[in-house]
Length: 407
Image 1 (cartoon, rainbow, N blue to C red):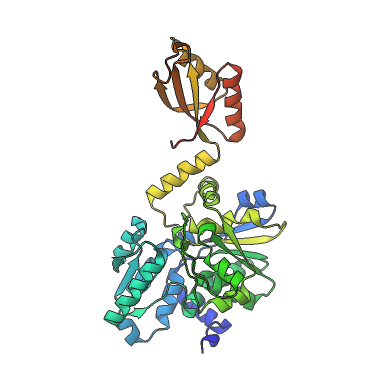
Image 2: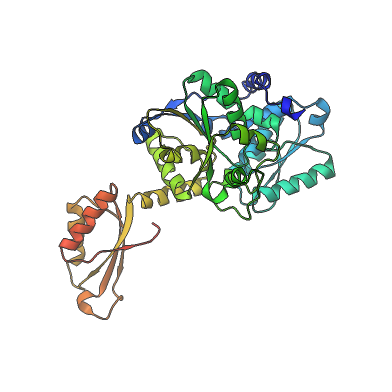
C-alpha cells in the first residue's frame, strides 16, 4: 500500500493542495556563490515561506489526506521548531487542535511562534528524539492523531512539492542540494526529481555532528547515533525515518556533511551578499557547495528555513567575524611611560585598523620597562589586512601576540 503513495499523481495533488497555504518562493540567482564555485547557483528561499520554513507543505498535505474523524481527535507532533509551526499553521486552517512536543533546547522564537499559531506546546527532553517519545505517549493517552515530522510518506510528498517548483522554474537544473535532518525533505525532493528527470542529481547535506542518514546510507539500514552535537538545531536528529529510508536509498545520489564552522561563515556570507537570514540547518546546502567537484552546472540550493533567535544570530555573527579575521584581539607589551598608547594607536591607524576595544593592564609584570600589557580588539577587512596590521606592529618593535577571545 505504502509503495503506491509516492507517485507522480500524488505529488501533483500535493502541489495543488499546498499552493493554498504557501508563498511562491521564486529561485534567486546567486552572483556570490556562482562566482565562488564556477557554477550557476540558485537559491530556493524557503526561509521566506509562511512560518519561515518549508515544513508547512508536508504538514498541510498530511492533514488534507486525513479523515474528518482523524482531524477531530486533535493532532500531535514532535519538532525542533519548524515542523511545529507548520503543523500549528495547517491545523489552524482546518480549525483543529494541535499539540506540539519540543525539546527544551528549542530556540524561544520557535516556541513562541508555535504558541502564537494556537498550538499547545509541551517542552520535553534535550533533543528531538526525546520529544518524539513524549508525543507518542500523549497520543496514546489522549487518542491524538500523530503527524510525524519526517517519517511519513504523505508528509514527504508535501515537502517534495519544492522539487516541482524548482524544476518548473529551472527545467535544466543539474543538481539539487537539500538539507537532511530526519530525511523527509530529501525523500520528497529526490523521489519527485527522479520521477520528472532521472538525470537530475539530488545530494543530501547533513551537519557533521548529526550525520544519522549518512551512517544509515553506509550501513544499508537505519542507524541511530549515540549523540548529536551541532549548532544546526533543526537537523539535530539521532535516527532517520524508517518508512522513508528505502526512497532515500533509491533516489538520493550522495550525502555530504558540513562542519559547524562552515555554517557560521555561510551565515555571514548570506547576510552580507543576499540580505537574508537563514538558520543554520537551512545553510547546509550552500555550505556544501565548496565540496562539489563540478563546474558550469546549474545548482539549486534549498534554504530550508530562517527561524533563528536573535541570541543565536548575534553569537553566529560574532564567531563568523572572528573566523574570517574581520575581528581579532592582539596583545602587546609596552614600556610604562607616557605616550606609548598614542604611539601604538598611530601605528594601527596608519594601516587603517579600527580599534573597537582596549584593555590596559599595568600589573602584568614587575619589569617597569615592559610593565604594561595592552590588549587591543581590532576590526580588519580580512586575513590579508590582519597580517598587515601585525607586520606594522612587529616592524615598530612591538611583539604582537594573537589572543583567542570573544569580543
